Figure 1 (cartoon, helix red, strand yellow):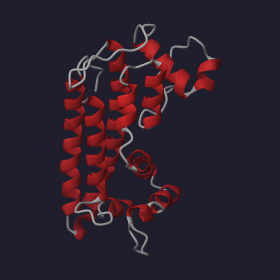
Figure 2 (figure 1 turned 90 degrees about the vertical axis):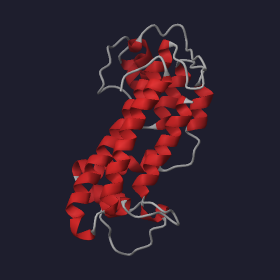
Figure 3 (figure 1 turned 45 degrees about the horizontal axis):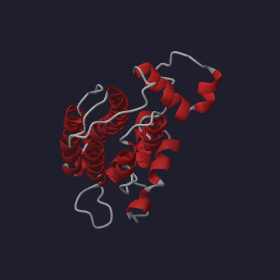
Length: 220
């Protein structure tokens, strides 16, 4: 995803990625138990791509806010006139989100590895405030939708990336938040393929829908 002068463009790009992940997730969920290995492989792909899509969207959205974009509803968005280019914008994000690092290296040409964690809502919220983004209130409102996805997804992403005793334990510790009361130690893939409370679909599909709603509100 790239920054865009119209949020329609950004919204369409991320929605295509989420729709693709939704299709694969639904397939993984519906597979019979004897095809668990395939479901596990698909879920690994979904979670890592999902996590990346959120981070890439947030970063592109933030940078878009610096080039006077238009929202889907036709609102013109502006920011501090001192932000002249993307480098200035990233420097502002560093100041807002990694201030101790920023103060140690004034004027540094930041790399992607230096940048704050874009998958965390606080990064976009604080960075947009730092540049006096005129859409800041809308950003706050979009992230007020109640969901655990922005915290819990990272825990599952770490499991699929590292697959060790620590990461599997952290993932399993989340089941009580989703009304899963089984005493069996479920594999993280089975957790994600389990409906929460009285929901008609599994956790992973709820997560994708919740992120889609958040992004719809950010771009509206």
